[in-house]
Length: 337
Ligand SMILES: [Zn+2]
Ligand SMILES: [Zn+2]
Image 1: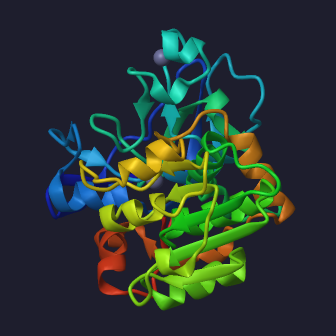
Image 2: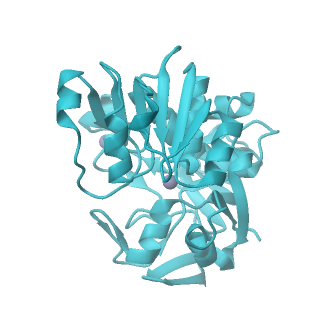
């Protein structure tokens, strides 16, 4: 099979590799579509992401869908031909975190495209049967792949306990922000406001879910007098995050979803006197069924986020697209093309 392999910073080549053989509980999936993510771009540009360092050649890509083509000896479901969305992290299922239901915090999780585990920018991948979720027939391959970033949004809304009547502020209208806006509305938020510095992204946010948008490149958010009770921080921008925390209403909840720098200065007296809750999110746990249902029902629109498509030999172009083209939202790699 062909696999797109990151050998070094800015060095990706397509290699021939053997098609892997499924273990007893694994399915072999022919990959149809893989979304590109900021973390893939970060590995391509820097060879590392936080504590994870690329030391061996690595296949990137973790937002994937495909078709089951073979099964291990113990797999009973997943008839060959089943179209699936892949949850790309398989935890140990034995440690304290796994047994407590927060398997996203498992220290021994094997997560696609995180060194040393290969991802899905290739023609075939193996996955534990329980992490390959069948999708409805009318869901596109690309939407099935984008169930992964949608899961990030679902997890963020759960961590923020978004409930009917909530006023939700979302900072950053990239793919995660756009999905968080739609998910918050599906969870019952009655007012969703989205900020960004890019007009066309704000336009898409209004079309998809936002009651109002603020271009924080032009206008001060705090001057607007908006008092959300939930903040989903999806910009990864320290200034935007701090300003947004400062607008939260009493007993508000802030969830940091975006990957940003290591440090952040916050208006701590605002946090203290209003008893603001602050938390982070790391990936997701038990989100696929909800995410698939939200997409299948039309409550969340996934296909509209896809603005660009690339074959397997053009992965570097896909990973650098957003730096070149500010109309890009989500680039998808199609490994069979
Ligand atoms: Zn991602
Ligand atoms: Zn574990």
